[in-house]
Length: 264
Length: 264
Image 1 (cartoon, chains in turn purple, orange):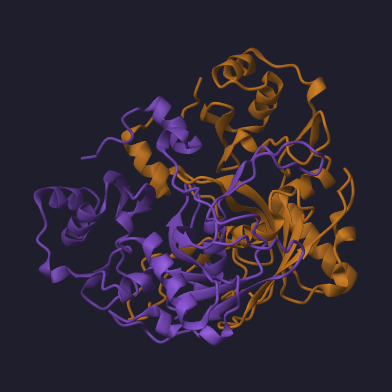
Image 2 (cartoon, rainbow over the protein chains, first blue to last red):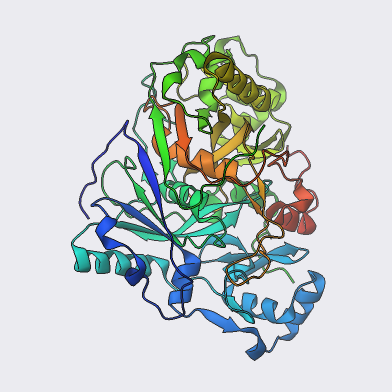
């Protein structure tokens, strides 16, 4: 994708897209007011909207919990069927606290492998989108096809942070903008090379969008962000970080090498 | 502070305040274009700006490293004097990876106890603000005194996330707006009670501001955020979460109870 223009000093706008309740199977692009978009806008879409549109719903009544699901459900006071679905979705169960499992999925640390009971029809749970990178590319290309505008797309979810109360945003995938920018070699105000070398722009964007999306009872599954000064090209730096390279998990792994072995 | 009006569906604006390089001792309120502010705006100020204004700078040449600082510096390939300052600032050293210590400070998980070498005069490091809650109250009240406008204030910093590359925003303190909102009892689109019960609005706001602030080489130490739909009153829910109540740290503590004992 082309170089985006850096517009330092200008305002940024967050514009909510309010929609009706999204039905399973519905094409999200049909719900976007394409005429109001501008070249270079970033469209943030909640993972819940993407999953619903892609029919990533599971009916709990069809689920038969395994022995391991039953055991974990008992340990953490959870619904056995929900735990069974989490086990299918998660790459690793690290542990849990009452009511929630701490899991790894697609390189991300998240509660319940992203399986969620909010904002989906009764008796169902919603899974995360299967491939948020591909999905954001498809949506960006479909918008280009329909109206000729170059739009960056970010698929966002909410996540918890260590030792902080409440949810912030995370970019599960994106297209057309860098989700991480490399600041190495740049200088600070005093001409010193910056020590913080990467910025999680995608996660910052997802958090900004959450200010309008709320937790989705608001009926705002998409937010347009206009005017973010983004330096340089859309690049290929992935936001997922291997545990050893991560300050938080790497430090803990050094003391407790068993951290990333499956919890029973 | 009074109830803020919920304006669901409206746009949010992020407005950068570009300033000259801030000098130690300078009053930040002098740098704010008060005439452009509106009642209900949120002013996000970088912790670096607050610390500089409050002369929270340490000259490295005056620092004598302790034996423990020397030992940790060797282990993690760091500057002995920098480690000494980190030891003085941190409440706990959890561990580290090459070049960075993982610390607890004021209930927050952060690299190097917030001690930073970027954007401060040569030969110095900058510490975090002493009391960001008090400081944001003072700034909000000083603005009210000078121009009669009711402005929420958030003091922001950047932080790293587990298994994610790059920095996002964190609200170290604030005044006049809730940094965490309680969503318990609210309903989702299908009338089901929300499972995600707290939103880290302060951290979302800090991340949104970072989209314009960058890492401060940009010379944008403050950002005005206008139009965030905030429900209800400014409340007293603190964003810091005790380790046992935290999904991430609580899950790890259950498996490794020594996690929050000092690392040597």
